[in-house]
Length: 297
Image 1 (cartoon, one colour):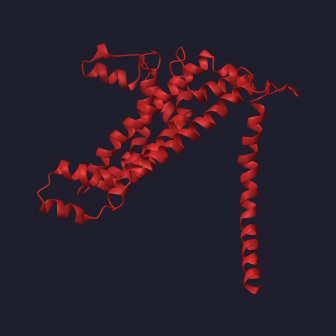
Image 2 (tube, helix red, strand yellow):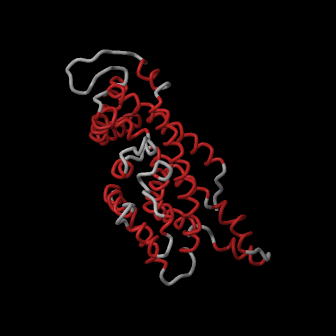
Image 3 (cartoon, one colour):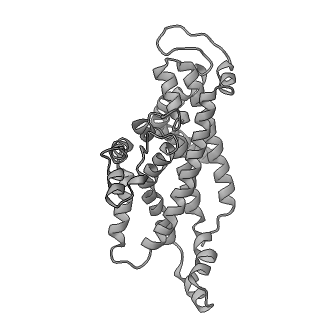
């Protein structure tokens, strides 16, 4: 009886300890999520005091909305490019900066520093770099005799989305690199010494030791890059606002323009609900599939 009472008191103290945090979490996160589900089934314009409940009509309209389908396609293309290129560049960079270089600490800081900048600052900076006439990129092309390659990078539908992918890579490759470096430093050196005795070359050691043991960091980087890309908004809105001709329109920019520019708050919220489930499904699937191939040292 005394033991049961002690356990009960411990549970009560734990509940009191987490109650303030749970209350704040409920008000700030759960409350807006629940109300968003309700608004997504209304025709509220975001301003009037009245609204009509329309059920699943907003979601049915999304299935045939050409603007939404275009934004969905752009979002997936943007996410796939960022995830593949960001990790594809970060792995060799991490391997290079894990080597015995005297300047590796400085180089790691240099490559990581863009990740701490505000996406708004990065977006406005690259807006100047991509300026068609006086921008840094086209000026450099002219300076090295490649003036024929000049482009209105953010004004041409053929290049705009890829130009934004380059901005995201510039900002976050260093972030992924740091995670890979931390993983590399946890791999025991005994494995490489044994591989040296067996006469394994550099590629064989990478394929059989390094890459398999980098699986945990690869899982983290893929999931983080996927979530960040699916929700990307700041840089896209600052540089193109979804244009030109919807070439860079993603789910987030379409949600913003629908809810706050066209005053279709209910319909815009239904786009947000779809994005919520999209991010949730993609994240859970990636974690489930990638964790199965992880090995530990």
